[in-house]
Image (cartoon, rainbow, N blue to C red):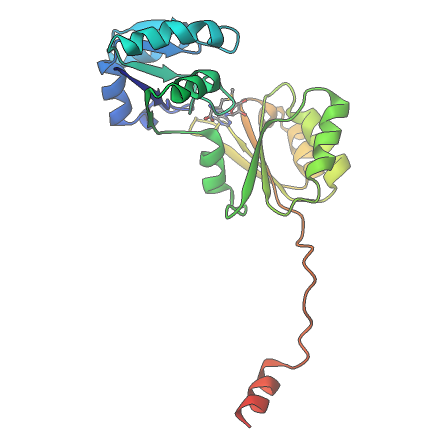
Length: 246
Ligand code: SAM
């Protein structure tokens, strides 16, 4: 039986491709790629010549039997998406879910993912966070989604495209008011930027410098202030010590 390797690729900087990923990509019989032209460019850069097959949201179900037949014939496959880790707001879930249910060997080859990359350098709480993928595109649903997370105490992380970043920040200004937000843009690329402030302040920055609204974004929202009732101390620490020590 062959193995399905789930291989992370860079989110911008090609140096972020791991040595293991390069070895695996060069050793499999087939690469299932979200966009074969996109991945083709990466493979050319690496000097790897392996057959490719497209696997995207619209053909994932059809591809399943075809790819499983490969595995059963003892051939290994690498699954890649256009950027970052497959299955993370990217195709692959149906395939991995089904193949795992069938007991096939599935091995992750980790690497970049925009959400972890963003959190690692944003200076926003990372002990507990929720990743929400992309917010809904429709204004009303987007506002509802923001209302639903407004009182969450853990950091909220979303992906956003350049077409919607300003609309999303405007919606956040409406729902989240002065809550601190960090926007990570163009991670690992030449114009990598971290902006931090209230949604309204970030929106103003993007209005005054439209370059700040270009590229790819990870939006991180600080959690709501903790709602836990603070237990009032009846004694000061010193008084308490004194009382205890007699
Ligand atoms: N699978 C990818 C991952 O592991 O991060 C995510 C794929 S999702 C279709 C694409 C979204 O990821 C973009 O719209 C953006 O929100 C985020 N993203 C990807 N690359 C990025 C980068 N270099 N800088 C900031 N955000 C990025």
